[in-house]
Length: 211
Image (cartoon, rainbow, N blue to C red):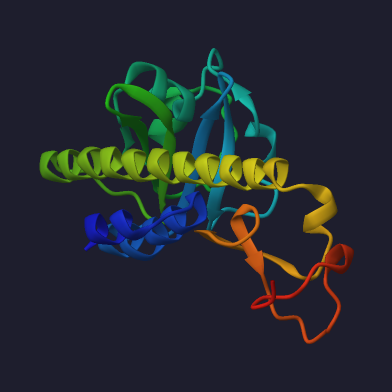
């Protein structure tokens, strides 16, 4: 179900919503944070369940920071902690959002490319079986692929909008009678006259159907 839903997500927000809706309930998780890599820093893309403001100090953390959310990505290995005490022993001094619970830190890697990291939080101590670790690691790969695809889609869409604005003459785009169609019509390529409820046309040109 998660894999299917991820293929239909076209934005990072939609990917995050799918993970919250499908992944957390399946494993009994209560907290989730998704971080995305940009310019060798990790930025929060989505979070749920954490105390307000708790994640703020980790925003934009560099890849050389000694934090489990960073090291799971730089090493490419998932990190599982059966209890908050185990997490505190592994990372002395790390801020904790709870005194009881368990945590899983998963690397988001797509085709060998680092994408970000995923943090799962559980309200009670729990062990992670070998099967659960394998499944969570595999799901993290699917999330990474979906997130990378969504970010690429957003980039391409933004580029297309920019090109459209750049190629459309401002003199024509400001006139209410011009409307994009996507075909080759009378006049300029990709543009055609549109009915606007007025009887006037630019520069006194005849309307459609007149010579």
